Image (cartoon, rainbow, N blue to C red; front, side):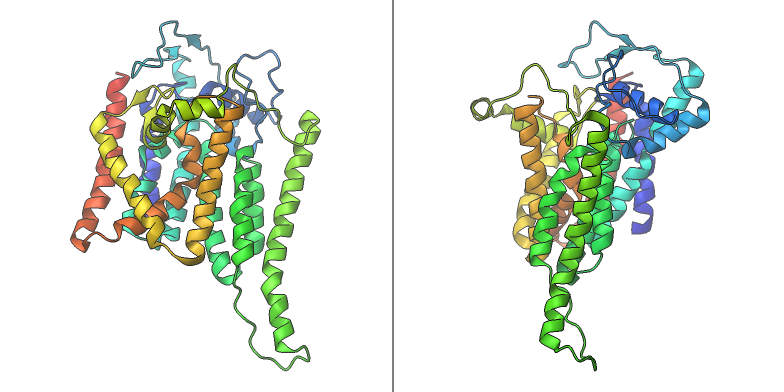
Length: 406
């Protein structure tokens, strides 16, 4: 059954791609502009003559799949008309008025969206592998917000999948010292998907510090065994750090060639938070919670409140699982989760005050590992309830979203 779960995740993500109106996903029109440029074989020009060009600072890897669809289709013509009555506080309120594009181009855009379902399947595959195939991981890996993100044009879906694969191999690396080159290449791929992948440098460093490669077997070599084992102990971390550093340098050089700076020029909002504001107004924590699990559209369409009781219970299981997991796996995954959370906090302090829990989704595999460990304490007869609960919640989220936009 577990072999079919990545396919099921892809199907659910495709359902979101066809249920959510075009353009009604965070910054989707700006991401579409990037994919359109890539489809013509060029990188977009930052903010030049286009009000929706503010995502042009992103690296290109996360847009390859929708760009392929647009290239095969010969492009699309989108005429977005802003809805002057759009309201962030009204579920189902649309930022753009239909029809957004003609029938042929709407079909192309839906198909471009649907390619993102590949990343949902890859995320679930990597997450299940990280969790030892435990079905208790499914309520986390089928989080409605993940399926929503993987049903829209953006670079977040690819980042989540690549980071999930990276964490899977990092946990194995910490235990046996293997996969150092593959991990370094995955970190590089993550950086060329979205700059926020920089948080991976923290779990990479932790994994290198605690890695325990298997000792070499005795041979007839003249080199004494203790010295050979010391070399074997340090070689995998050195290789991993070297490949990662090379990828980081390539990413920085790419930015410098495009923008004249080592870091991309991220556009900032007119008002960002101060630390004192975050401490005085802790409601942003609730915003992070809701938009991590399920808050669709322009982050203005949550699910009915009973769903969040389910999500709160799952969050409690994550806390329990932090105590139940042990050893190198806990250290690597906890460092990834904390680094990702720190990056989100820094985003609020430097880029945009808006609480967006979806930016924590790159650590979803770590959340699933901790959560499934916490839920493992439940009796075996309740494990199928978790499986079907995850499926029912995902299907109900799709139905509720369709009703909100009907």
